[in-house]
Image (cartoon, rainbow, N blue to C red; front, side, top):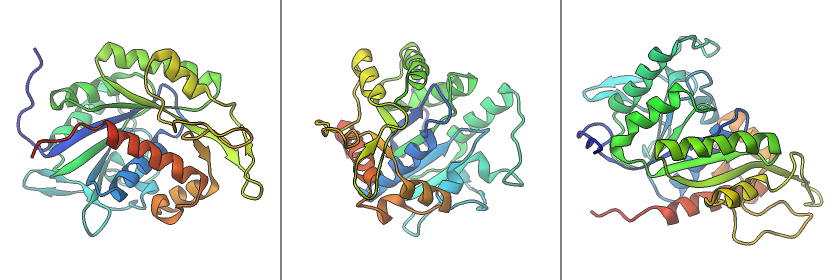
Length: 284
């Protein structure tokens, strides 16, 4: 019998979503960041917990580098990214003295910080908490899932790129989810083609369709559109390579707000809408 969660700093969080991948470099932090922004623009209050302890890139992606974490009466106050306090972030990146400082820690110390992040960050009332995890199926993932299990996470988004090497690693991530009892909400295919800004033709830089094929084989949702466009357009719902998206992440700007006409915008907002549609209604 699962232990019930004690009232605490996650008591006001309605839904918890983990973003996972069996492979590094697939854009997991990008998907976490843009999903949070899309949910925020849909009127939701969102927090991001960055537990990628060795590669905390989300503070830069959200223009929050150099911000400080403060103590409050309930623990650590997350960094709020707007005046309305509708989106907040906690990351080990805020705890490092220098941005290029390496986190050279053994497993027990990493696991202890993850547990502290889960228990001691005063999120307040949130509609969604998006948890960005490191690649793989390591101790850090086990520590994260075990710390969050009493709060009944909504599930996991699993991120891949289209090529077979990535899909093979992500297949093992799906096995990890099954073994740990974590529901897979869907697979996201990132870097799925490049749309020419002049002729709109799509070039499949990293192959095509691997994420959707994996979703069909595994029997889990593919978070793409219901109907794919004919070639030479990029697959609907899969997130294409988009220079505007890369630029906003580098500069810490809000891609969802600034580029509603870009190729990646429709894919990212479609993924967010599918998450909203899959979220059970909360009783008041």
